[in-house]
Image 1: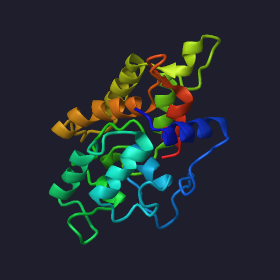
Image 2: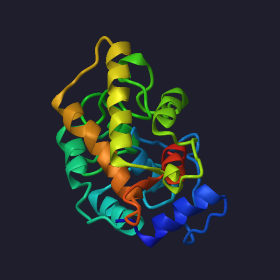
Image 3: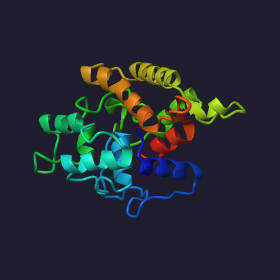
Length: 218
């Protein structure tokens, strides 16, 4: 699934020796740049495949980004793009574009129980939450590397169990937890998406260092 760029980028982030195509180096967002609750979209902006400002994103730009960075079919994110348009989330003044931070609107595309963000009613559903991610990291054993070569990877079963536990945490903490159709479909879907993006076919699992980089740099 991964494109050459993304393999280079994640390998570089994990080793500390990044090597990127010119213009697609990782850069953190500036004070006026916008980002979304979705790590995958934020990675694209942080590497300049989407506008680094996170603003005025159109469908053609998104399609080019997912093809070149992730080696996905160009239509992979079309549904999410159209949802943002149909739900009238855009604040750009142009109905055919949106800003990344427009996607923070609760329970449209964003939903409760994110594995790297807090719930809307408990604080900030937009920015990466180190405390929540630390719990997820522990559950997936991201920092637990032993002599067993497979200890460097996360399996589907491990990721699914960690996600399910995170949802239960959110339900206990958030009295207004919304188990909507968006959440029921989106929560396992986002886990499947990041695993597919980072997947190593040779071992049928995702490298832990790549998972850490993908979320930690989003």
